Image 1 (cartoon, rainbow, N blue to C red):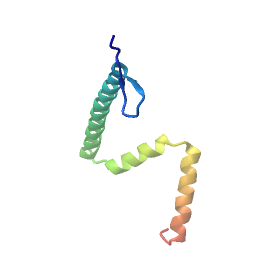
Image 2: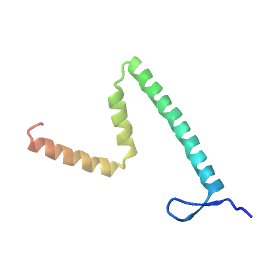
Image 3: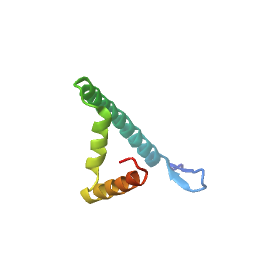
Image 4: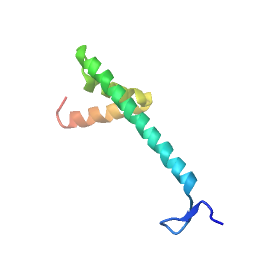
Length: 88
């Protein structure tokens, strides 16, 4: 009687159907991610066509992901380093 387990590359047993489902799920998510990335690119293109700077918008997005105190600490360190280098 055959079962759905095959010998894996590492010598362990692998449930082929389960593995296939996980891979297919990951593939669907990769497709969704690509679609979302394309949507973001479209938004940045629209922003640029309206006179906004996409690099600045991306920077703001990165800042908004951080906790306020984390961002403030990073900015304080950056300012200290820039002052030390005579940049400000």
